[in-house]
Image 1 (tube, rainbow, N blue to C red):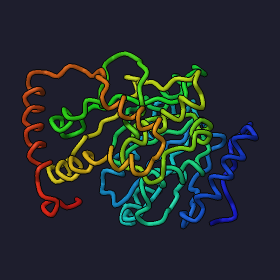
Image 2 (image 1 turned 120 degrees about the vertical axis):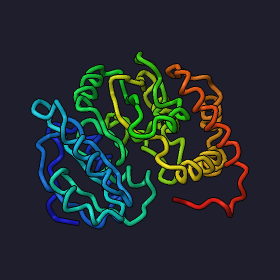
Image 3 (image 1 turned 90 degrees about the horizontal axis):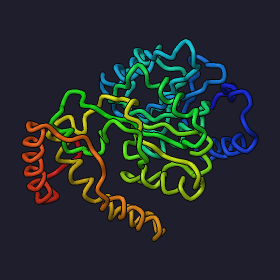
Image 4 (image 1 turned 135 degrees about the horizontal axis):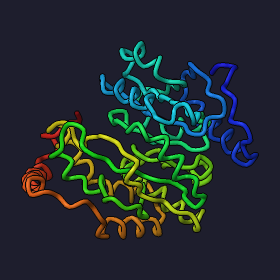
Length: 316
């Protein structure tokens, strides 16, 4: 680790500073190198992109993160957490990021998110999927919504990037046009107050799925007077699946989430909370006739995929 670290933002509360230092101590063994390419004074928001074995889509993601309408009015920083396999992209990614956090190769996604939070300096932090494209107003919307002190965290609306029919399976991507209370079902398209994230313990390191539900459960217990909301103006373009190979692997993986989470999290109260969320009918934007046909066909394919023998399915 380098001797020089970027200064924490001005006026950081002592309690949050102590938590930050504890998180840095916890995740320091996972950090191979911290590179500060440009120090943003007292950033209001940190945009965190976790990337592992990415392709050119990472560069487009970073370009959208850099091209914000609020750039001149709101100081924000871009933190790229590199989990390995993106060495070929570094010459192009370097000019687009402010802080590069090089982590242990293949570190679990949520452990990488937690490590990144340890070095984020914004009052607010946002997680952005490395293949997602945020709207130019993303920073502006996050800062506007957080002017309401009752908002602990928010998730946004996702519209298709290149594969609209695959996205018909993602009913949670688009809840409609109204701001409503929701869970953080789009963990790669969300924002949260950094202090809230630290105080609630963040995402469980080993979860792969349902981590957003878990975080909202913890927020409700620690901050019962605060809200977690869906904000339709917070926009991202992203595909639920980007290939049939990805569709097959993730379909089978997602089926096991409830069982795997139950094995990792012994809190029966949370498991009841999760089951209630999974069973609840949730709002979503009505589908067109064409989308409804596509959804029916994909559900039929999914039914068959779930009955494939395990040896027939590999990880993409």
